[in-house]
Length: 416
Image (cartoon, rainbow, N blue to C red):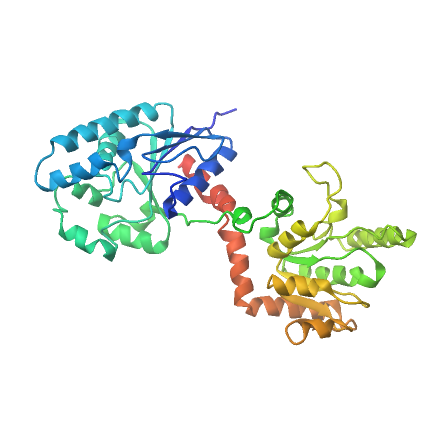
């Protein structure tokens, strides 16, 4: 079995220091560690932020390190003594900390002027090593109007500022958007294809405050790949679950990649409840929908090793991860799911039976239970093809989760 490469990150700071790049670095480091890579973060300021990520602090690489700021001012006047000593000290410290690393990911430190001694130390060190270096470029003063005054105050064509205009030939460059790719290619005189584009992402579970069970279901059921339809009800006959299942079949025929999540168990008070549940399972089998229709009653909680129980927290999480609420009941006394979905701004498709219109009014999509499942499926597809909020939700879920970005774009960098 091939041993995984050891990963190191370099930046001015890491959490608990707050900043956009710091958040990105934290997410990437945790993903590498979770993926079984020995991971280390080398910064000028910060503390250990994850149990399986080593943090090494070299104070001199902090952008606010007093000697760094002093040296930056001195070199403007042509005095390089302090600057060169600082550069050599940083390089020596980096060599020590990087000794066991195979891949080094530098966030912004090769494109920003916040620590010129660190920049020059890396330009000196990188050509002398066989380690793989990746420069992650979030920003550059050469393309950001914010730095207009700064550029006017320094001799940008002279050392060490001119290093900001010189991409290293043995470094792989990555940036965060096509805009940045175009801008950097222009100032560096490179073909755009030489600069990889990997977007920033979101930690969906953290941002949405998801429970471990919700994260497990999201990954296991591949909800990010599907039109996720929530059916929050106990499995009893008046809920008309079979009609929902037939709608899912039609959606599947239309290539919508649906997933129907049925949250509740059979009614424990009625023997007929289990018979109805068995009939539904048989229908799912007959229609070939085993992957599309999920009875959470049949799912084992990986944390308790018992049947999954859907409490209020997990129910909320499932709403957040779903594209719509589906209610196909032919009898209801009230309709709490409509309130829940409304509170969490989820689209609703529901039976047009009393008393549901009392709650939903004109703000929901109604189903006539005499309609054909094919007709309802067509309406659902049309709705989502025209609902920009839902389309953006799908796009974020599918394209911008850190886990997906890591698997599809970041990890493959190691083999390039």
